[in-house]
Length: 161
Image 1 (cartoon, rainbow, N blue to C red):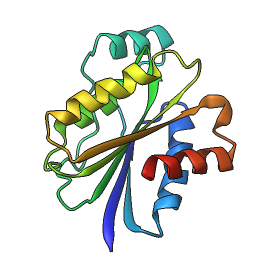
Image 2: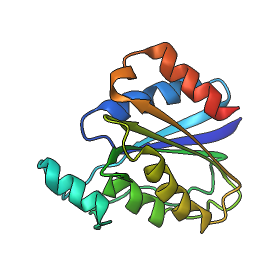
Image 3: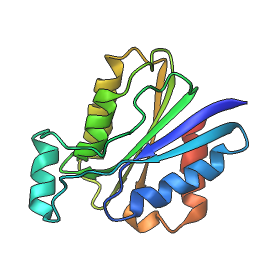
């Protein structure tokens, strides 16, 4: 059976909810691992969070994370959209992950207002293009749709086509 990993950062729980649905949707085709990123230096202040994302400030990730992704066929990475950008934890993880050449990538993001969603995905894609991945697919879920299970499943299925 093919292997997948769902890697995500979730400050409020929205991205985690989508990641859990994604894991469930992948289970029929993939043996799936689940990796929640934890930021050791994340501020609780919204403006500080937005500033760190916008200006691409570094984030301190918890120790012991898996960065070598050579065993996976599909790598899914999720983040909230903060100030037109991925959360610093997700960005740093993408920069640090290794052995993803020729891998299938699925990016996903959760958002409130809708501003900056495409820019966020573009930033994540740019990091991955330097790592020579095979293909990058993506989907977005607005905060008000996270509890709509059919909507989220549909977005996932469409992205995986």
